[in-house]
Amino acid sequence: MEVEFDVKIDSAVLYDYMLHHTYTSFAGVVGTTVGALILVAFGMTGHVVYLIAGLIILLYQPGSLLLKAKQQALTNPAFKQPLHYKMTEEGVEVSQGDMVEFQKWEDMVKAISTGRSIILYTTRINASIFPRRDLKDSLSKVVEMISTHMPPKKVNIRM
Image (cartoon, rainbow, N blue to C red):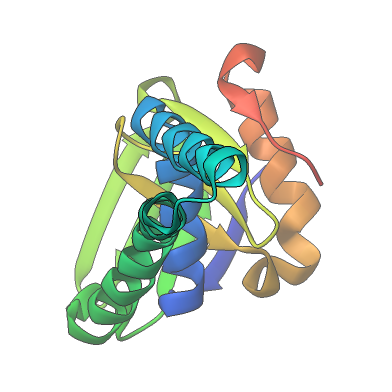
């Protein structure tokens, strides 16, 4: 079986990926916990400095990720045109213009889903992002291909 589809990466898709990647990491969890604890300290003491510090810690990360996503969407040439993906029994081919890259299934790190995308990690920090809006009728076929060719412990996709 083969599945082919095109995706267009924009700032909203990048932001969704960055949020998930950041807030599922150890540093993201610790930062959120610290910010929440500082807000609890404000609630217990009433010191405004705790409120300000807690809000800064909790709001800085998503704000900076939003700006970074917008900047990357505007400046990265790879996001100017759609990417064409072809999933085969051997792996995943991505092409754009004259450039073609191929990744074997056994080299994939993990596959996850967010509300907006299916994300196929090719390394610990790099990924192919498949926005659900672009997959349309191919969504179930893409998930089936990933689930068939990757070990279950590496796949965490919810439809």
